[in-house]
Image (cartoon, rainbow, N blue to C red; front, side):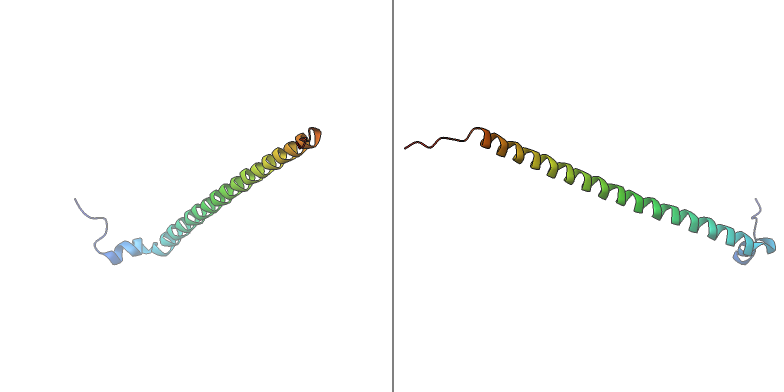
Length: 82
């Protein structure tokens, strides 16, 4: 079995097309890295949005419960015993 390149220098030169090949490899890897970073950022934003919505829903439910309790107390005030 014969190696495709005789040395590391020949490997990086890629038969005279090394600049273009490695530029394409770098552009591809940078694009993939950017896509990965953007996906992670969106994931974090989505989780934060879900947490904010859940906290808001919880506050709304607590406010509704306290309003219901106040309305119930106002409709049926407790009588004081001597």
